[in-house]
Length: 304
Image (cartoon, rainbow, N blue to C red; front, side, top):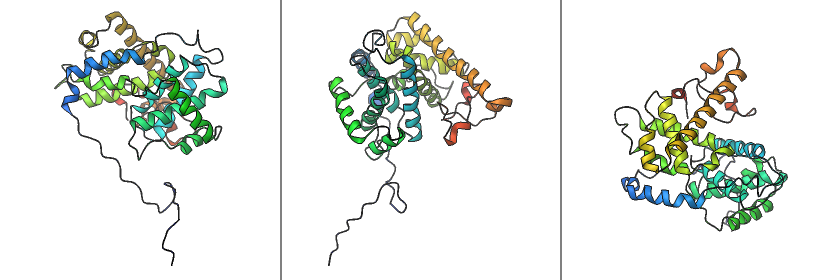
């Protein structure tokens, strides 16, 4: 009698047992100590993109093409409910690769797919990382599994296998815990709003010239100012050791970016429907269930 079961059930098939949701670790106060912040500030320079690679390395692609791929990557992360850190880390891989290796127009989405795969493996629990087959599906099967695997190795080699990069998300809890916000505002809400601003800023090439700590500090300040509170720029400047004028410029660009998106959504959604929408998930997708959601008129209305 043969008792060996050779049946293979895909994770998405009916009747297949679902894996239990991964349990998140409890916050560790040790990770909020000053030495952790100092270590991140020293390390972030290793992962910064300091030069305009579109003017030096890249000859076929443009910042507009990068934005289109970044928006697609963000949409994939949202559809799969990835951790907040996955998308900024994938964008960091993308920019670091583009700063050292030229790519063609037909290879940009393949590069973005490989970066998503790597970032998901590093920041997602093993049971929830983005499957390669799913990423190929999101590209409308325009790439093959062999292409994705070869480019994954190519990205790793160009990054010298240094993939544990520092992103703006890593600074949020460290900076928020050092601001005098107790009793004034829900810091978790401020952090969620700041995470949204970081994700939106990651789509635009102009924000790659700012360090991760600068982008995190300005996203926090923008979230606080959106809640009609003091942005605490002076304190954030002291914590990040960044020039105050640089922080002010980055903050103004973030607020301008948010204002432009609000205006665009107000024009796109007729009859003031954007005021009645329950929430908003950027970027808008025409073929997804959440495509009818709109940008709220106040940052306090942002839902996640």
